[in-house]
Image (cartoon, rainbow, N blue to C red; front, side):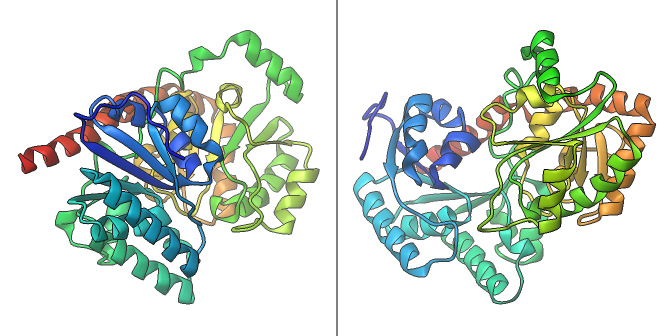
Length: 395
């Protein structure tokens, strides 16, 4: 079903494609509405349950196209053909894809349909953690995606380096926009001032937190490649050592694609210092009552969670991977640790507990860094300038 809202026949069509509708709704929040001022924006994605939210929040037309996140050749060919037919009908000026499956399907369909400007944003590479046959397949998918695209936008400098290292495409096809990130961050929404002291105190009471607790928070999917197994191993020892230490786990389990270990599940369920909160529509109150974000992920593009935590005035402990190590500067607004290293997680958290002045200084610095480098408007303007440059080339 298609819904047309606030569009003009004079505007050129811009189609944004993601694998699932949640990416349009959450990852690109606000950006589609901004772009709709200048172009007739159409959002295409699968998992249509969030499409109504996209239409309501962004005021754009949407088209449902079922896609899977797994490797499913028959379903993928069906998605490719359906998208090709849509693009032949809509005749867009630009097709701009996000997420791996939407990238390969979107860029191939756009090339087949004769779309002149085919743009793909890379916000993470699942292949980094893949091995064997799956790794070979994902490498080839990435190469084919970039071959079909006319421009590829890694959303961090580290991702750009990985792409070049693997020779997935030539340097002149790549560009990192602004200072990185696919959507930047709305620093007026992610602002510690928006959560009142009364609300913070009530939430602390509800969760059983004490005034002198040092509160760590993890926000994200509870999966293996977010470093949860190592985090649980480290926190088990830390919680026995420091009675004032608490950990908030904010996010859903994802048991199908990348489950955590049974030991990690047991730790979350039985450790009284861990408060598991599941999915939360608004994570800001949980940031507001926390001191440190713990984010020991194995791979990222440009993690929104680290931007959000920084904007909310938290120090962060992150793994030394692209995106994370561009947002966080060692000792300035957080700590950087090696990947898959439970002892390093423990050591970094111990440092923050035992050096409260340094931790407070990191927290005090965090928001200014995010506001000056990653405010949403900067990212949106950079993307808009790319689109306008393409218009100028055509004129």
